Image 1 (tube, rainbow, N blue to C red):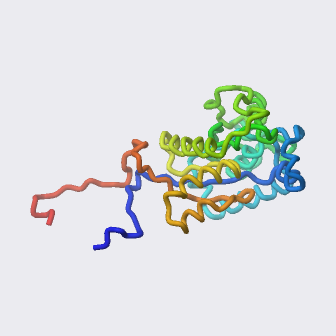
Image 2 (spheres, rainbow, N blue to C red):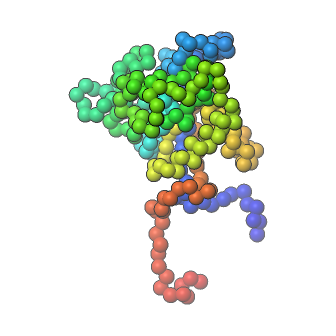
Image 3 (cartoon, one colour):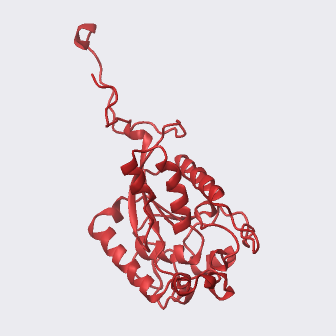
Length: 269
């Protein structure tokens, strides 16, 4: 028997499905494409989506709705930067918000110069903002977030409770986070997902964070799989992955298994 088989089995309760999304086109993407020095411009502080970016959001929303994915996702995790939150609520949020309807809106009307109607928090999964999945820190103003006070005003139904500081104390004007540090942060974030009970989780993040994190996981894979993991994300691209708990980080119990019962020892044969 060949013990080096190319397939593998793993208990379902030790797996999660995650949907990785890079934010839609931001104003910094446009300006940086013209001149890379534009990333240093203070005018791009916490960059918002462009009109094209919002069109990309609409296209992805249509896809996740038609594919049935929207009904599967139990939690949406987003970086607390404006462009990722706009993408997250635009793709996975409810429909247009109507005044007088119970519940706070996910996004208020016109948030971040969007020109968009308010987005409802009804009939959609909960949204959670986390610092650990934000873009590479430092130097570029586009990667510095707004205060949580402002974020809560623009995105009332997003949960910001796991972010400790109101102002952005992680971003430094003269120190750029190393690629290695981003990758380590990303792997810590992936491990943290095992503290969550949800099995199907969407994560809206950034090009650099996704690239450096997935590159680390690609080192343990077949070259073809590694190439898939390491492929750079385009704006508003979604990829689905299976996350396997090989280090027993989670404590989930099987929900679909059934123990059965032997009548006698002979029935084991």
